[in-house]
Every structure is written in structure tokens, then in C-alpha cells.
Length: 429
Ligand SMILES: *[C@@H]1O[C@H](CO)[C@@H](O)[C@H](O)[C@H]1NC(C)=O
Ligand SMILES: *[C@@H]1O[C@H](CO)[C@@H](O)[C@H](O)[C@H]1NC(C)=O
Ligand SMILES: *[C@@H]1O[C@H](CO)[C@@H](O)[C@H](O)[C@H]1NC(C)=O
Ligand SMILES: *[C@@H]1O[C@H](CO)[C@@H](O)[C@H](O)[C@H]1NC(C)=O
Ligand SMILES: *[C@@H]1O[C@H](CO)[C@@H](O)[C@H](O)[C@H]1NC(C)=O
Ligand SMILES: *[C@@H]1O[C@H](CO)[C@@H](O)[C@H](O)[C@H]1NC(C)=O
Image 1 (cartoon, helix red, strand yellow):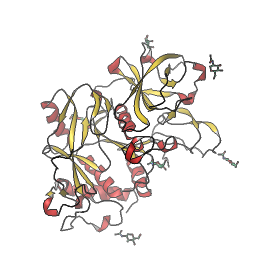
Image 2: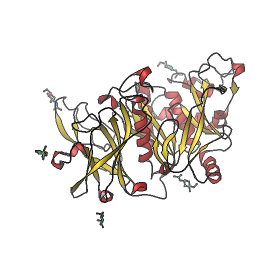
Image 3: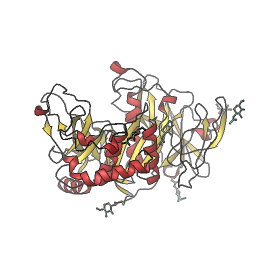
């Protein structure tokens, strides 16, 4: 459930009560569970999913895009086969509202699902002073209520950033409870220079919940509530033909795009990877040193693609020196025990993940960006690659056919001690 927060920032919104309440990292009051039939005005945080009235579409969050004449960009979920004209109704702090025709851009990567990550753009000379926006099927302003309006973020640009490295983890769901791999990943990331991790939470398991509450208190993790299953039947897979459902992988593409805009003027770089992946420098001690070199060599690049490499969770290191009794009761995978890496297969595409300069990206997919301003660079495997401990893709290979890759062990002493401290502080040991 929601913990109290340090923030004094009040936001309001009407909640159409299909669930008790939604919480995000900045909720400051606890609310009683509302009864199912009620619609009630509550104080409420900024971020959520809002249905566009009289349509099948949804909006998620709104940003000023300084790169396109301060237009308002609304990250949205659009039902592809039910397009209709949409309008922007944007209001300033004095509640003066104006309307403009909306431009809908459905992202090309929708993997065949009926609903797609999209941008709804509001172009108008007056958008720069707007503080809230609604997307509507009509231009009738009196049809718009508080619950339809999204706060507009990124109103001012920054040249210096609160964070140098932010990791965006799309979608926790289905009681995910892989605590040991999660705590090791976060602690590893902290050691190599990450200061901020954003996680979209649909649901998680009881132990991971404790860990997340700890990280939220500590401040490294920002939890964004993502109750997509209250609005759609999200797919558990990435491909419509194979997995069915309304929207790819719990809305992963929507949250990745949201995360880029959320961090655009907050973080120098953003890493886009899954919860079980670590983007790991192999020639530099940490991410700042890696990016300093890469960026100096490739000044025009805004998107750095990093190869994914599989470390099968089925192959254990032989001495079992990291099979520690302190971790035996912790659920999940111990990545320190899995140091065998699968070889690349010549004719199988090795999907990549990304380190991006968020200010250079317009739209993203999972393995590449879809639209960006700068250049794209494939980072060589020996400079940086992903440590991805999971079920094998080439499970028929024996240990002798795999590569030994002990990069994580380079951080052994600090990593173990920090993981132990965190588990204790999370009340898990
Ligand atoms: C994640 O979402 C679930 C379901 O809404 C909620 O019960 C849980 O408290 C959330 N966890 C965090 C850390 O926000
Ligand atoms: C919900 O409904 C029940 C039964 O009508 C009532 O006793 C209860 O007070 C209601 N809860 C709230 C929060 O209104
Ligand atoms: C925006 O607000 C500023 C400050 O109130 C004002 O000077 C400016 O004229 C406004 N711009 C537009 C386009 O309304
Ligand atoms: C605009 O919306 C209001 C409130 O829903 C409604 O009463 C009014 O008839 C609408 N006006 C037009 C021109 O449709
Ligand atoms: C980010 O990196 C710059 C330059 O390396 C450094 O001066 C700054 O303190 C770093 N910021 C944070 C939040 O660590
Ligand atoms: C693991 O949990 C069991 C049952 O809760 C407990 O008896 C045991 O001492 C724990 N072991 C360790 C190493 O913490």
C-alpha cells in the first residue's frame, strides 16, 4: 500500500472508483477505500491512466515538447481501429481554456495489438502557458471536468540535471517476487553510478513489496502506479498473434515512452532495460566513465545500443562460494552464481537495449528508438554489454560450450555488503 511521502505537493483529480485508490510515489494522504458504486472527489497524485470520454482511447501524461515549438505531447493509448477526430482542451492556472485540433501519432511498433502506444499532439501558439490539458472527442469545454485534465510537465528546460543516470524499468506485474535478483541488480547499478530508478507497478509479490518500500524510503526508486489491468486486458506477451490481449506486454511501450519524457530534464542519461538486465561497462569502472568516453568519441549520438547476453540460471558456478546461507531464504535468483554466458548465434538477432540522451529521443520501442534527433551508435560488445540472468535460450549447451564471464564479481565485496544491509533494512532477513 502507499507509504507517506516527503512531498507537500497537492494534486487533485476525481477518481472514478473502480479500485480503492491508486498510489504513486508522491501520495501524501491515505484515503479510505471507496465503495464500488461511488464517484468521489479525492486528493490524488498526478500520474495515472485516464479514459477519453466517449471513446475507447486513454491518456497517460502530458508534457511540453520544447523541441517542437512548445507543443503539448500527451502520451496516450489509442485503439487503432476506432480512430475519430480528437481535440485538445488546454487551460492555464486561471482556468482559462482553449481548444485546438489534436494530431494523433500511433507508434509504428504495436505488434498487432488493438491498442497502441501513441502521442497526441496539441499545436498552438498558446500552449506554452497551459498547465493542464484534456483530450476530448469534442470542442465543448463545458463537457470537461477536473478528472479529464492532466497536469502538464516539463514546462521548463534544464541544462543541469538532478541525476546523471536513471534506469527505466517497465512494468512489474503478476506478483513478481524475484527479490534476490532485484536487490542485486539495484545495488549493482548503484555501484556503477545510477542515482534513480523508475518502476511502473501493476502488481508485485509480498517480499518485493517490502524491498520496494525500502528503496522508496531511501529515495533511489520512484514507483509509478500502473493499474493498466483496471482499464484493459493487457497481454502477458509481446506478440498479438501468439499471446492475444489488448495491449503489448502490460503496456511496456507506453511506460518506456512515458519514462523518457518524465526524465527528459531530470536525467542526463536514461537506461532502458528490463528488471533482470544490467547494462554493464566492461572497460570502464562505471557508467559515468563509460559515457564520458563514448560521448566524446561520438558527439552527435543520442542513442547507444547495448547487446544483450544471456547467463543461464540453470548453470551454477562450481565452488558455490556465493551460495550464502544469509540469502538462502530470499526468493529469487542469485546472479552471482551464474557466470556462464551463452555464445552469440550467427543467424539469430541479438536484441539490444539502450542508453539514451532523453532530450534526443522522440519515440521509442523496446530494442531501438523509433524517432530521434541525434545519431545512433552500436556500442561494441567488449566495451559494454548486458548481463541478463534468465532461463537459457540455448539450453542444450554444456558448461564447456559457454563463456565464463565474472564481471559482476569485480564488485563482490561492496555488492554483498550492500545487498545484506538492504535486505536487513527491508525486514527480509
Ligand atoms: C504495487 O501495486 C500493487 C497493486 O496496486 C500495490 O498493492 C502495491 O502496494 C504497489 N507497490 C508499491 C511499492 O507501490
Ligand atoms: C461502504 O458501504 C458500506 C455499506 O453500505 C458502508 O457501511 C460503508 O461506510 C461505506 N464505506 C465508505 C468508505 O463509504
Ligand atoms: C505566457 O505568460 C507570460 C507570463 O504571464 C506572458 O508574458 C506571455 O505573454 C504569455 N504567452 C502567451 C503566448 O500567452
Ligand atoms: C456542451 O456540454 C454541456 C455539458 O455536457 C452540455 O450541457 C451542452 O449541451 C453541450 N453543448 C453543445 C453545443 O453540445
Ligand atoms: C553528474 O556528473 C557530473 C560530471 O561528471 C558531476 O559533476 C555531478 O556531480 C554528477 N551529478 C550527480 C547527481 O551525481
Ligand atoms: C529460513 O527460514 C526458516 C523459517 O522461517 C528459519 O527457521 C531459518 O532460520 C531461516 N534460515 C536462515 C539462514 O535465515
